[in-house]
Image (tube, rainbow, N blue to C red; front, side):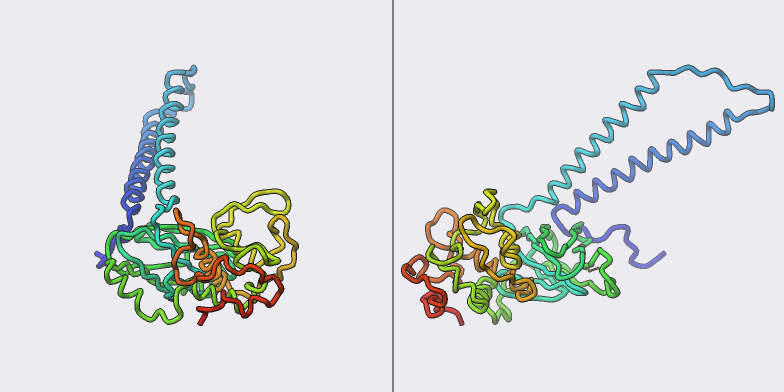
Length: 348
Ligand code: CUA
């Protein structure tokens, strides 16, 4: 026997068991039906083959009862399989509302991970056990695919947009992470590990080496570094839309459509601002494609998200990245005027 041979990878996420059950049942049913057909085929060939050269085939008339049976039974059987499969699919696709959000950027040939607390890692992902984690992913170059067999999770990672997946680890351990989409010469080397940790260990891991501050505070730094603050003020006085409370809100754009200011929209508005201009504003923002990296875009989005008032309160959420003088900058309107404004205090 092969030592350590296992038919299945670890079953280590909340959906993995469901996927296993569905997979095994599908194999058993379809395998069983294939086997039954094959046996019947061989049996018929042996039993009814022509025994002498003069033999004539018997006249055969339709048997509607048999025909109806083999149409109707498989139809309902496979529709039931479809319904069940759809249920599993929806479970895998819909992240719970309380999921921790972690960002990943794929590039030839590595995975770069950013935690909201500021931790960054390469080809490793640390997560707590027993809490849903939602990954937001994009690629700097070609199509990759984020694959953790133990979680039964596989999601394509595409350039120019965010794709998302979620999982909840159910037992601590070190699990393989693969790129599952051929992406060039070193595709096979684009691998890593997911570390599922007990929540307490995870918390202490989070506090290690977060020197640069939270993702949102990094975003705040870029916000000033790239001159965003020159036009985007924290009231309506700027030449550009103000961003407080923008995240996940509807925005009317110049062609009259309404879009939601989600991660994808904000990303596009940073890298290619001309694509969807907010109604009433001129197309004056420079293009940041090639200037701002995907990781910086993620930090900027986190900053803008932190500017959003927390649900049920009128004040911006307290992430530490929010200017305390929010809403008090009336009168500042000229370009450059914000460079010494209050909004920059607190930037290290
Ligand atoms: Cu990235 Cu294969």
